[in-house]
Amino acid sequence: MDYYEQARQAADAVRARIGEVPSIGIILGSGLGGFVESLDDGAVSMPYEHLPHWPISNVSGHDGRLVAGKMHGRTIVALAGRCHVYEGHSLSTVTFAVRVLGLLGLRVLILTNAAGGIHAGFDPGALMVIDDHVNLMGSNPLAGPNDDRFGPRFPDMSEVYSTRLRRTADLAGRTAQVPLVHGIYAALPGPSYETPAEIRYLRTIGVDAVGMSTVPEAIVARHMGLEVLGLSCITNMAAGVLPQSLDHAEVVETARRTHGAFSSLLEGIVGQL
Image (cartoon, rainbow, N blue to C red; front, side, top):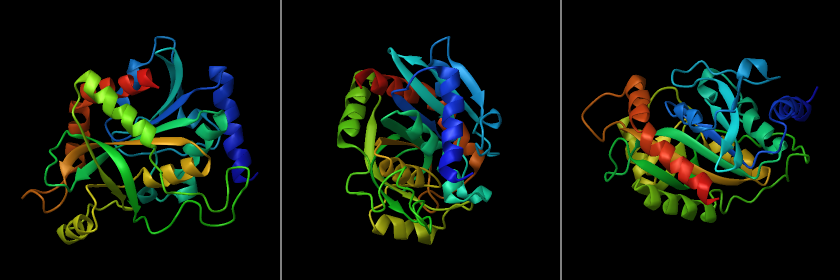
């Protein structure tokens, strides 16, 4: 069975449980999975291990379940957790969930992550709208033979993160009184955090926040013609910005502390769409 058929089988399994075409997909990063509790009481929860071919993440802060439910009258599919390249997964495995969401028929995908702040004006707990990205993963999820059933060989990346959706996020932030910043996100493979020298390099090339996800998913989503919004929770300042060491527990805890503001922002975005 080829990769497309595996994604189709997983999409069929999800569709059989939710019974309709969702309008919005959301992938929730480290410590941000609590948003799924905001969906209506009739929400359906599906552990990843119960879905065909779905990769499992073993990283703290990633629940590992797909939740489908209603918000503002719209059907939302939210993924509480993702897998990562640093766990030993290939980029095609890391982006499998996006392939499934695209085959479900949704057209808007919101990608979220916990990120290290590089911009000197950021503070831990800030919420950043991603304006663009730099792919420093060492490869591209579209490398290899192209399957035209997913999308074209050479997809345009001149506007990965939708201008319309970024404006929608700004409006939702103002309405919910959730301050937002904007910036450029860089993805590195991890799992080690960046060195101070690497952070100085990233700052030099115009990067504002850094993490270990999101970029491969965004590339694949655009390959399938999805409209993408990216949101980063700045959970810590990157190496060398402050005189302290970095710890994943701090990342997850800061993300959880921002749960209220983050959920209000996401709910506002969904309401505006």
